[in-house]
Image (cartoon, rainbow over all chains, first blue to last red; front, side, top):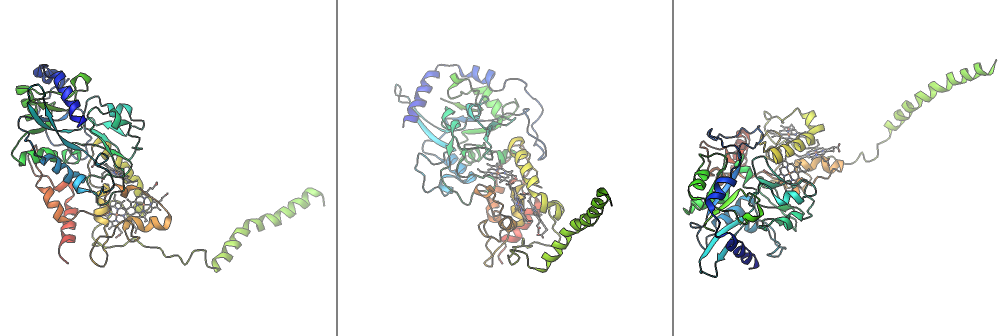
Length: 253
Length: 175
């Protein structure tokens, strides 16, 4: 797939970069909060005291395993769990997909889940003419489908090809994950779960499979597991050259 | 009689008559059937217990329900405010109507709570192109209840209010 080729290229470009430096300086710029993270009361708005992120450890991500993808489909009602019968495979929703990479020089192969990278400076929000693409104060990048006009500029702008467009009428959506024809969508970091003190469905599924290749948490909280993992082992952004400061980081790429 | 006086006299007679005219007209119309008066209005079905009340007094909801949900929409979408009171999901959970076979009626059905008045008043909302028009079954919620938390403590299934959970459990029971 041309997709993989691209990522292969990106990968070779930043293979030599020191990962520790990336993790320490770029992941959580600004304040480090030491107070223990507490659940947000339902009536309080989210704020920038948190920045949600996901760390993917490609060493642990199992070849052929698609538990994260299936869990996302089920949780958010797309793919196998929706009624998109008319769309071609290229048109169909892909909130998260497994990408396989192989370094031609060494033969070393890795597999990883690719989804919205929740950039600090999201290009999708930059190009959106209506303000439908936006970043929440806590770093989660979303589409406000109520004001999305379906122009798909954001799909073009996204360097990760993380977004998709719904081409047909849908039925029986999940009550907590409304989606419908004529709007763009992508990974929401399971915002409906996160706001209720939960973790994204993909991370949960990966843990349930005992692969433990995904960590979810607050990048600003230096005591969170994700921050400790990042401090100890480091991780990289895909396309760090774009300086998007993504909230999703990968180890072993 | 000078002209001004005559004019005033005529005006004194004509004006009251003019003012009374509309009243006379309505009185007359009331005797005849109004156009479309044979039109049947689907009244929102009352299916739940009498103790349950709407989230605001009924007359307020009748007039201003859209203000509450549209405000809630922006609060939830942009600020992550997840109070349940004015959540569209909760309106649907509480106002769900079942047909004779015990199945929830869908939005295309004029008996669906949000379709009742809207059909009559020719209001067309697109909400249900994306939003679920029926509550989720209790059996489905069970799978959600297992979802993990990262700060400890139990999460109510998908943040639904306990009232709703009780209601759904009752609805889901074999009948």
